[in-house]
Every structure is written in C-alpha cells, then in structure tokens.
Length: 266
Image 1 (tube, helix red, strand yellow):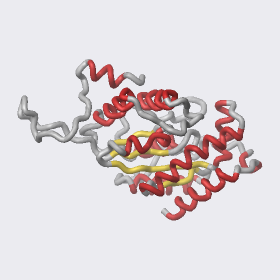
Image 2: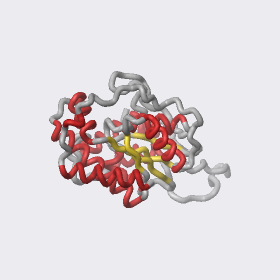
Image 3: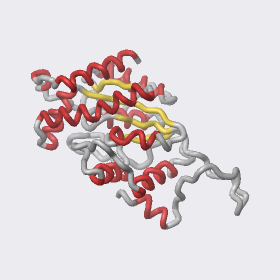
C-alpha cells in the first residue's frame, strides 16, 4: 500500500533519489544509474475520463508500471492508477484536514509523503518516458513539478453536470457538493494550463472528438499515437441523459468556459 516503497527502501531493494554527484561510484567505479526520463502527469478530476486518457497513453508506450487495471462496474477497463500514490495522496490530504472530496486550502507535505514521492520517481530510472494518473495529483501538482527534472502534462475535464451526477450516484453526495468538488479540481487544472502550458481536452460523448483529442495530447508529450488505438472504447456508457436538465453554478460555469476555450485554442 502506501508504505510499499519505504519497506523496499529498508530492505535495500531501492535507493532514494540523490542530488548531483560524481559521474561514477567512488566505491566501485561503475557508471551511475540513469536519471528518470520525462514524466507525463495525466491530470483531471474523478469521473472525468482520466482512466481512458491514461490507458491510451499506456497503449502509446508510456511506462506506468503496475497500476490498478482490474475491471469493475463504474470503470470496465480499470482505474489505471498506482495504488501507492492513491493512498499517499489521500493520506496527505487527511493530514491537512481534508480528503479527496474536501480539498484543503493549504497542503503541507510531511517527510513521509515526500519520501514516497521521491522513491516513486526513483523507481522510474531507466524506463524512458514514464507517467502516472491519480486524480488527487491536481491538488498537489506543484510539489511534484518542483522535484521532477523533466515533465509535461496532459489534462482532461468533463461537463460539471455529468461529474456531479456521477459522483452523486457513486458516493451519494448532493449535487451542490459535486459541483463544488468539480470547481476546486478544475480551477487547479486551469491554473496549470495558464502557468505551465499544460494542454487540455474535454471528455465528451463524441468518439471522433475523443480520439482526436487523445492523439493530440499523446503527440504533445512526445509519444506516437497508435494507428489503431484499442483502449478507448466509445461503447462504454457514460451519461444518464439527465445532465442537460441541470443548471451549472455560476463559478463552475466560468471555469468550464475557460477550459473549453483553452481546449479549442490547442
């Protein structure tokens, strides 16, 4: 779980990332381990198409390591998330008085959380271009960016009405709470787009628009989109049809408009 990396560290199976050092080991004279390659942060909130995007990146050759890819009702192709980061990020939010559905105003990383992050990065040495998807990353992205030597991002968002309905069905939250969660996450996605140029796309029911958007984000990350992509499945049910009857709160509507403008400008 969350402490897998620390257990491996204690067992001597993995070494924490170190700062700049000599080109060879002073003890053995051997060449140093390769640096981690470019990291692709796959960014988006819960119930917004991040699994489809992550699986498509994985299909295009992005190294993601072991992920939660078992099928279940709400996600027939699996979450595509590393369990270590799911538990670490949630523990980090809880340590700051919040949770995935109650994002804290301020988030302070403790040494344990930094260790899991750094060891996760270190475990990607020699894997070429690598990445991960975990929705809570949106809430703590800057602390990842600060320590990644080379990174890029790929963002995805979904109509807040569809997300609020999906979260209501999954977690039993009132729609107003779902809209508030959506806006908290997607304000951060918009900020990452504006500050770092992270490209974004909208998760829609249009299969061709989805394939085009996914291919654009894959190419932006320096990977080659597959000629015949198989992971994205347009037949998987997504919408109940009730979303169009809902009114989007004003603040969420402004965030949605800004994200759609960013996606169109790409």
